[in-house]
Image (cartoon, rainbow, N blue to C red; front, side, top):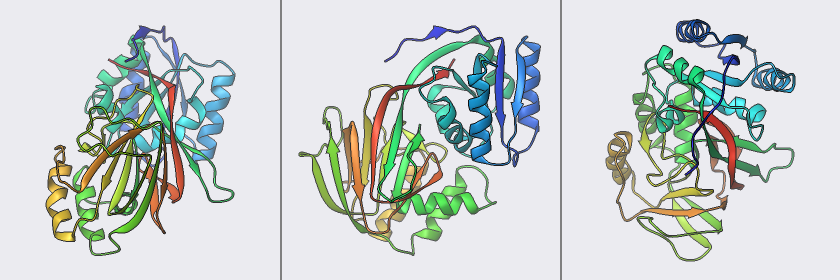
Length: 314
């Protein structure tokens, strides 16, 4: 595990979501200013414009840190600008899942307390995942929490389009809606740099062919607001954890969902876990999401990028 250190934070670039409410952002920025931190806000109409403005700010040396006031999706957008720069990323949670904040111990219900962590300047270096798509013209994509594929991704995409219910329950409702559609598909999983220590159902060999409902690749343990999909993932081990939910029936999946939503470890014989530095996933027509954002369709190759992101932590 990487060691924490202290960084002086006198000025920050704050990234906010133009579609989100202002209350959390206003409270956080007021707290930062009260702590003597200069604040420059980026509230752009598109992901591409957000990345451009944050990159410009970093290039011009306009702040000691970048702060995302939003959810995992906004952090995902910002990764294109901050990954591998050494500029610390702070976060004030204001999204549906807030899984990275929860993993790091950042308060999810108190914007002033989250802003205090930014001003305090304690930093830690963590890994990122990098998706390399096979489709011509598709761009690589960073992620920091989980890349989901198959049923998992279809649920996330549906949940993103829903306005009700709020919070974690939205994913459960979306899962119930998706469970009647296409279900198990044939996957081929290729593992590079695979290890088996500490896994609940380690697999032998570097290639796995199986029928599966979904496959999730985790840099963090949870996604979707606390669903424990990769229970042994570590943010700074230079590896990615892989959870394969095999050929479950719809009835079995309905039994699994409540426990998964409650953040409980899954010990079903069809739930297998692996760990590797690089993973290639192939499945016909299976969509992918990363940090809850669309990430194209399989096949994709995903690799761990060690120490790619500096974050502000408790």
